[in-house]
Image (cartoon, rainbow, N blue to C red; front, side, top):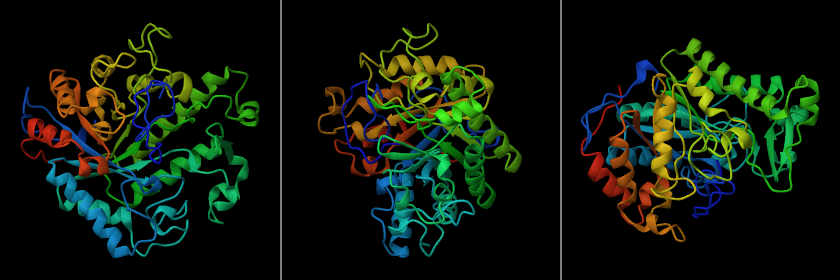
Length: 416
């Protein structure tokens, strides 16, 4: 989740996610949204989600170290923004860098709250978010990043009691950042327990993972998991072993969430391209430089087929007609993957691209986002959309989101 980056280009090769996504770069049955008829097309359950990132203080809080009352006010303002735009769910990032926005038993308080990792902010952000969201008729999904520890590579910058400092053998430095090593069973157990702590404490409506599993490839660098591979690889192909590690995290966490709180949804928002057709005949007709299966070791299609997730929200952050990764082509491909599985499909939308300086011509057209929903309303497999990000929705540079709301969200849709 590279929210701290600000690129707005559309090149299909490079690092991804919110803010610098490139093409190189379901809810469980009890939580289906009860939809009023959308502006166009037949009535069906509909997700209208808003992503709010905390890493690097991207969306909230606006900066670290604010008084608790001001942080709380910014949070409720964010929820009110969702209500004004007739959205029905907020996906709030509460575990951005192996830290927490609640009094976790497993990890320190986030530095994005106070400026100092481990310092108590004097209030409970996640507990407040759940209460205030439900008061407004919104769902609140706890968005967690699985393996990222730090946005720089200084282990000494972490809180003294941070699990990574207590267990430095869990840590891999890569590309100037620190990551937990997904190849270690003890790491997987820790990540699962840290996430489950939030589910155990609060009536969240869902747990949400973004696209970061193994880190995005960096030219000339390799992710050093040699020791873990030697200990746990069992002689298997390293790529297959890495995918198995990610499969275990996803499948185990899904099962444990169901056992702990059966109504809580678990979903993932992966990079939008599983594999290109040139790599795999079952892949999409795309030419992305990054493929989730091969580069992030995330077999997202398998997770759908196995029912290890309740919904999938691929980040389709490209315009209709973009040659390397056409939005329309990818919506169709993902719709075919979820058909008959019971897994819900929500499409990740790049509100931040609309009107962004340097973005492609299509993104300078205020109608582009609304056109995306026009297209999706003709596809019965699409159950709604998640919009990135809260800051972009608030700013709405060229009125593209206001137009989307006018065209497609004419009335509120309550979350059931």
